Length: 118
Image (cartoon, rainbow, N blue to C red; front, side, top):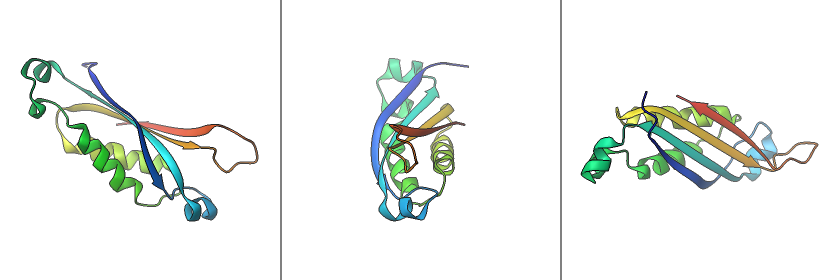
């Protein structure tokens, strides 16, 4: 399998995800990182966007899926990864990481994240 990758890191989206009702009500800013595994030889030689995966598609998919409230970030990350993978047959694999800063827990932690691979 080819190991060429495109990474889109630090997509910030305010959303209403969380297991607890208060999390869903208040919402918070989440950070999304997406990594695409695909062959980049053709786009590297052609300099044409048609020969690669346009990362603007990633951003619009993230915005759309983050707007759908879910209890689990696993569910949101999986939806995002599947939607991106289905967008192009150029993609060998998609990794999506969603980070939640300072989750509502009885102990202080900097962030919680979920990462899925499809």
